[in-house]
Image 1 (cartoon, rainbow, N blue to C red):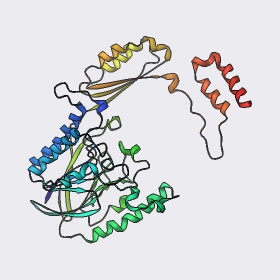
Image 2 (cartoon, rainbow, N blue to C red):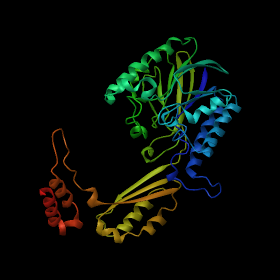
Image 3 (cartoon, one colour):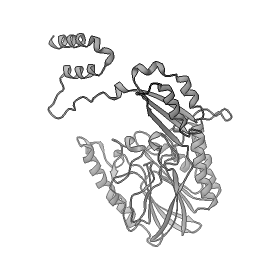
Image 4 (cartoon, rainbow, N blue to C red):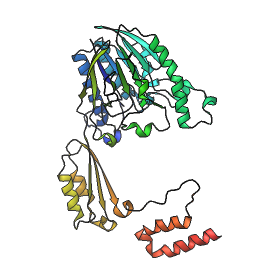
Length: 405
């Protein structure tokens, strides 16, 4: 059996807005958090020791991280080279330039010829020799339209049509790699992609209009013993039958509040031809906490706010505090008192929301052939602005006059 550690979506250098400067190191504490969780993964790989490390892509937030962030990443992965543990570094969407011309942030490891390191920026089958035998890893990096299609081919096509055309182009390319496989040794597909069954995490907004969605049916093949995925930040197995397991390990550290309730970690697996055992290994990532309270009906809104904070364990957490109130209660809130109550948090943000704004009814939705009368829209707006009621008639009159002219 070959032992492997599979991790993905490190995003080293993300989330600085949720951190603060460590006075002892001069480094943002969120960078320290990300380096710490990465070091936990590398520690485990060396302690086992594993035979191979698979990284599923997105090392940094973009293709050109600052040198000190690049150095932090390199210092951790260099430990694998020193321990003579091979690694495959797959190129994700954040590792590429916006034009998709290569994985600039990771290609340096191929240029420097780091021992045992493979940079997966093309669709290719890599045969790797490990302490416990050979293994095949097919790399499938993040694919942009320009990778498989020319501009004239996509001109005038909608997103769904482009997606269908991309899949048709990918299928024979992937099939060609599968046909060259040695069936006597284990095979892993390492891919950075959006699968159609994925329960999306933080990447759900980032994926809109970028890349394309691949059906899970393309990944369920008898030739694959394990499918190691990257891109989606929420850990999940897309194939409950485990034949083969199709696994997103998720990101190793919380990037923002969309990942507040998600467990973070990596996958440890053992694989042989036709057999695989895997487990998700949690990491103690920095906890995020949202505290939300409605004090709009309270006689003493400040006291209600402070009680809501006091009920929560906030120490060393990244806290987002949201409180809802009426506009006339604003003068009753002492923001300094709220600041003092949140001091034990690692970092915090405070966001008041006015009930009058939250309760504003939506404007009528427009359908094909429908239009919204400007006066009707203005009337709906003014009806929900208490501070403009005294001049509502004058505003509507002026608007009608402008429309008539």
